[in-house]
Image 1 (spheres, rainbow, N blue to C red):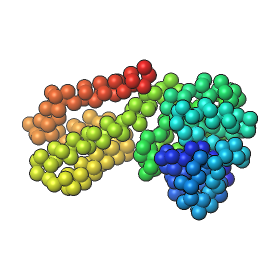
Image 2 (cartoon, rainbow, N blue to C red):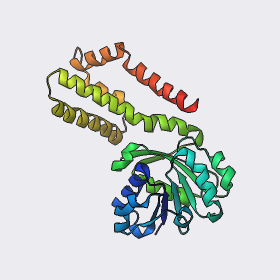
Image 3 (cartoon, one colour):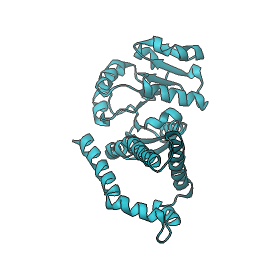
Length: 263
């Protein structure tokens, strides 16, 4: 069985642990969690997870080491565990802005490192996770990492130079989508629905639209064409949104977020 150590168990580390345990990808006795305040991990301890505040102890027998920490702590933790790392252990970093070059300066280029960028839907095993690997990662290790994140949603391999772009489109994108849903709900209330009913209709409609594209693999315009009849209410609404800059404002928002993260 694959042994996994998660260092820094906050919201993300906990979501990864919960998803892997829930999917039965890993058993509790093959998981170690490390955190300064271990009292917050009592629930996992009762399940049989090994709990410790000692990062070096946490990684001792691990095949995969997930660094679920703040960016400003990442390099210090790598310095702490550097002497204990083995060449067959894989570091998984879901940390924004810490690049392979930054980590390799500390632990060298022979340690396999994977950068993984999930989004907050990981909490319900519906994340989109973008993955890239340094040159030390083997094909077998790549497959293992993909299997892990496929338990938590859907994963895709990209080049490291696109990690900032993936953060904007996949992670910031959750907020963009939620803001669209909120506006949909507000519009629904204005045309007569109570907020609870508007929530249900808007949420399920967005979920259905996304699933439609996932299952059919169609371009959005193909599905839009199916519901836009001549002189109909759908095309009238879409055209008004476009006149008000709907697509343009979304694209500009994505580009602005990208400039912020890279600048």
